[in-house]
Image (cartoon, rainbow, N blue to C red; front, side, top):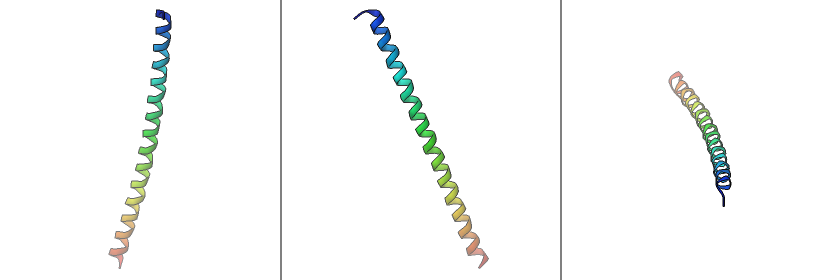
Length: 56
């Protein structure tokens, strides 16, 4: 295997690694957004429950 072949393999490996890292970052971003939305919903629910308790 020549140097050019090794260089090509290294470049392909690097591209694959970059793609995987990008996919992982996108997945993490999506999960974080879902967690934020869930937290907002829960906070809204708790505030609503507290309002109901104190208005009775």
